[in-house]
Image 1 (cartoon, rainbow, N blue to C red):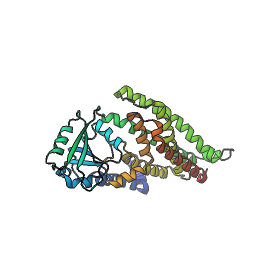
Image 2: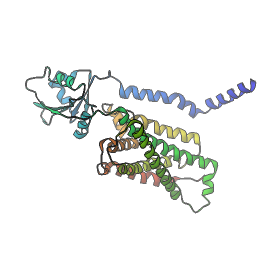
Image 3: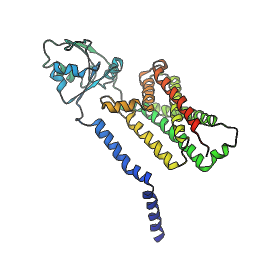
Image 4: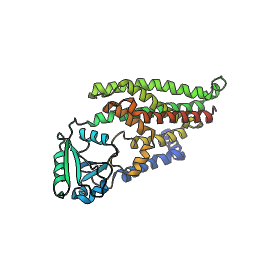
Length: 343
């Protein structure tokens, strides 16, 4: 019993003497809680979701009491095609559009999906009490409701990429350095860039296999419908995973402690888990949340994978994301090779 209690005491002391682990254990859950509290709260769960295109909710508010109903969440869109897709998939109950640039528009076009259970309610509320000077033009869109499980699959594939790239590469290299493996490699003709590039290629090939198997499992288990080209998906995954691997290599370029590497990688991964659109749409989130989200590489990977698998998008439409990820890969890999240390 004494040996057991002594071991418990020693292990407990190891924990609270490790200041980094201690702070991370208690502070990180609070950071996540505060992030969700300020980013996604402040109002009750909406009964209806209404999209506005272009982003001009403030200009329409004086026209109609409809825009003051607190149970309706108004989401501004700058991409009409994306907004219409959400109506088709029952993610929006109604979409409003006014092409007029004047202070007081006289005509509003709206889209509904008659198959949506809330579309008729949103339409009745829109027309009830509307001023006589305001004209409405109705458009209908039909489409199958997108299951949450189907919407979630691309996010989970992307999250798996992130963990495999950052921890599977960055954390392992830190362990190599700590165990002296890198020190022995330094005696070979191998350059730092060659070593890091080999890590990128080997991990990328592994990720292509695991992504294919995971996607196949989703098709077999839940009947996930693949709308786009699997080849396009593999090409995009290669580009996205290269960017994430390069980021992991940059983190591991000089760190010698596994504990420090674990903390740094966790600081990087957890914001991406919650703010990259893996679990839920960021439509209607606070502006500062959206700004942070767009700065995260995983956001662009999730959006691209989702566009290919669910929307059937072609690589040509994802060219801006691919260029940005490719440039990030080159920059990060170059910096990592320049500051890389073998010891």
